[in-house]
Image 1: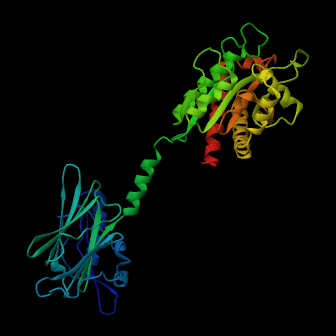
Image 2: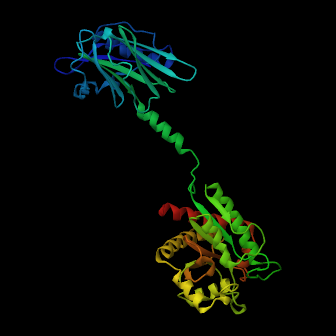
Image 3: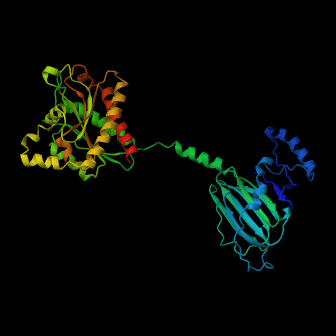
Length: 430
């Protein structure tokens, strides 16, 4: 750590009264010695000192002459100047400012450095006494600790302590001493970079409930081959999605953790009990025999009165275990339960999930078809008191897409796409 001594002359121009060149025996600094020895001859001609380990170059005090513009610290004008030699000590920005009652010289300041097992210390000792040394608190943003104390009746000590080796300088202007810490911005930038390497957790403080459709006695849609049941593939995708979301900091709950049957109307109970932020129900679609080679693609639905025949058909298929028993009054209550803000939020969530699912799955298969974002009166979503969507991850009845739905890599791609969509939704709707 190095230091410079400088004063301002009466014309407020910078005048170096005494310049110590601080060097080590290291090769990297030898080339600077001759340059600074020339500077020495211009001033006091003082010899080079080898007591200190670092060099502070002249350009580091290029703004010293602005020191006279610093607002004077508030002092006690009634203080007894015959008893105390120092008026005030304050910290401002990256400086400690010490005002004396009378003009001072460079002999008033002594500097030394020390090192403990954990910290570096820059210690300044000033000739003088300060009435309020002990109650005064000093701090500079970026310096771990600054201690001020009246070491004895004739010496005021100010100590800078930090885990890093600070670079400090001081200069004198008539009856003022300024202690300045250099390169604090570099230290702050390093701290910012250090924090930036921490793993980003977009799901912190977010609760998600995942619903794997069907289960148990309800196999859901059936594919073209043996045991190609909807309940199996959607459960696998849900488990992969649970793992991805937990890694990203989300708190995740599943409506079923195994192959068991849960009534559709009971699936949102868990979401409401856990005060979930979103509810996601995962299903696979099916087509009539006449269209099994025609219908394919990923679709995402949000709760709303159906506006298309396709949406009505899909909803009827998924609702069949419960909606067939709905009376007219129940159906009326169904429609009245829909509220516009929840529908709007669910629509936004659907868009983000659909877009990201398509992106991830098309990395594996470029021909994945976009079935779009659609509205539908899905009974499983009615009871949710939060934004909710129902995802149809593909047509289990399609010859090509149906087989993909039972491929591990494809299931994982679907899960990552859904997770990315959830991240995107929360990023835009904090």
